[in-house]
Image (cartoon, rainbow, N blue to C red; front, side):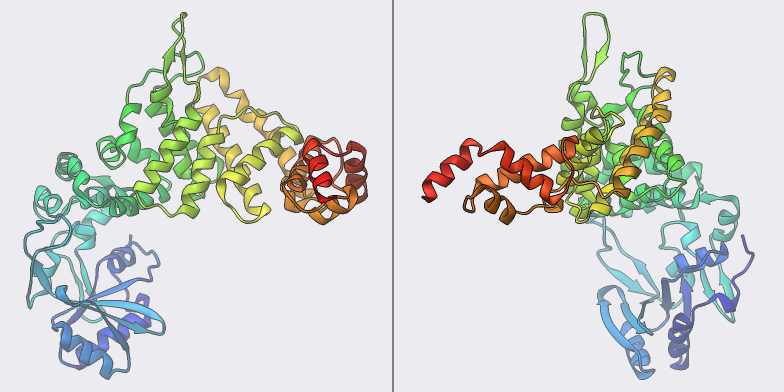
Length: 480
């Protein structure tokens, strides 16, 4: 970690805001995440500025400097300046009143000292201010905590979490993102405050969870911040200690899940997609509801992928996860355990199911999702008993088949058939109607099964040779 922030590291658009405020006689500092990341030597682009100016004075100074200004949070002293297309939040020094809604302070009091403003912030690593001339202001030891790799609350931890319970998840998110430990007193307070997440708006919880899952270290969070993760996603609670009673499993469902989450990071080289990370977290969430024990004492989870997919869909909807992310996640959960052989028809069956369930637009996107499915299956195999781990190697052959299918532009959509509805009507002498769609779906099934190539003349000959199914016979008689 760098010992100081160099002025050369500061972005010009942020410095322009600082200069405009100070030219008008106000004090101003960079604060928050930009300072934290600059001290770590990490590039950061979002700049927040704190100033002694009231928001009206800030707005006047910035407009006079030729900047566009938006009144984005004037009740709390905030305006947003736009410089070269970059937004910079500018907030008056303030201290906060009570947080009766567990989200926003009921009132704010504007103050004249930046140190008082820093005292209201959540964690020491976020409670620093920097100026290109005056240097660093660090009243709570944030720079030392960065050096030690520690997340520590500013002041009394229970007070910080009592103001806004979402800070419980923020602490875990920062620990995941930075690879830091949580300081013991802060850890104790956040565990005590975790149940209060039930009072926080679900979309805010979802936003923080996306940061945790997207960090690639959610496996650590599930194992080390279990109380917090259970409070954020109550459906995970039943995974704790669930002995799978199976020769195929060495771990309870929670430990298995954490290992799968770590596994997808390994197989993806640490750049797993967000949807794969969510799928790893939720892939076995349906197991507790499906758990049965047979007469030999062997545990089973029949139907858990479908039950888990339905649960995952409800969880993601409650957390306000966008549908374009949620649908592929649910598809991965639903089909992660579907039997599949390393041949084209079997893999095409799974691909077509993923396609229909995921809502992805292009065949290339669906192929990418199928690759992620294979990584999920590899991680799943390695997180089971030793006797199952060879399946992770067997999946290399599935990968080979998938690559060949992609190379050969394999067909699993009616739209990709070499014949169209018009071709079917001309070949069979029928009018438009549902039966034409049935004929196309039959042709697609034959192509996917490898019974016939996706080639126009051959498909037309195949359609003619089959004659007219009952539905088509009725349609032709009706048309006459």
